[in-house]
Length: 293
Image (tube, rainbow, N blue to C red; front, side, top):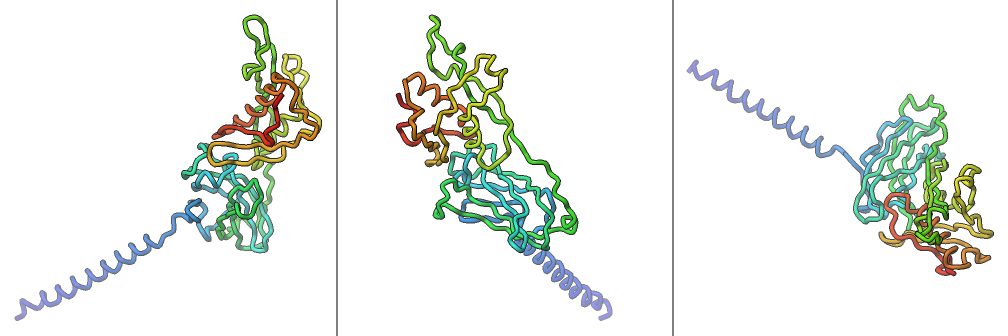
C-alpha cells in the first residue's frame, strides 16, 4: 500500500499543473486576440499608428492606408485637438502611390504640435473634400493621451516648404526644321519654386503659375509666358472618379481665348504644371469654353 502513495500524490499534481498551464495559455491567447493593431472606418481607411488611447509626443508619426477616394491631390488633412477642442497642430497625410484608384494605398504623416493644456485629446483624419459639400465629408477620430514630456514642449518647428515646377514656354525650343513655331508641348520649360507645404499643392502651383512671375535670368534664357491674364482666377479642383481632374477657372474677360496657337500654349502650361503630381489623370477645364480660339 505504501508504494502506491506517491502515485496518488503525483496524478493530482499533474492535473493541477495541466490546469494552470491551460489557464495561462487561454489567458495569453485571449489577450493576443483582444490586442488592437489598427482602427478602421467604413471600409475606407485603416490607421495603424497611433492606436486609440496611445500616449503621444510631438512630433507624432501617423501611418495607415486608405482608399484612393479618401485622398485629393495625393493627400488629406490630419488635425490634433486637445480635450477643450483647441487645435494643436495640423498636417497633410500623403501617399507616394497612385491615388486615382479605389484600392487601399498607404499614407504617412509627421505632425508637430503645440504643448497641450489637457491630458487627453483627439486625432482627426479627414477625408479630403475639395467640394466642401457635407455629403462628401467623412473622418475617423482617434482618442489619444499626451505624455508628460509633451506638456513642456514648445513648438519651434519652422514652417515646412516644398519644391514645385511651373511650366512656361520657350518658342526657340518649339520649331520645326523650317523654323516654324509649332505651338506644342515641346516648347515647355520647367522652373522651380519653393512654396509652403499645404494640403492643396496642385492648386497652389497652378495659382502661382498663372501669376506669371519670371525672374530676369529666366527671361534672358528665352522663357516667356502670357500669364498673368486679367481676371483669370483658379476657383478650385474637382476629382471625377479615377480618370479625370477638372480645374475650374473664372475668366470673365475671356482672356484665355484668341487663336489656336495661343490657347494651346496657355493650356499646356497649366496641364504640365498639374501633371507633375503623382497619380494625375486627364486634366480638364471648366467651363469648357476656356482655352479655345
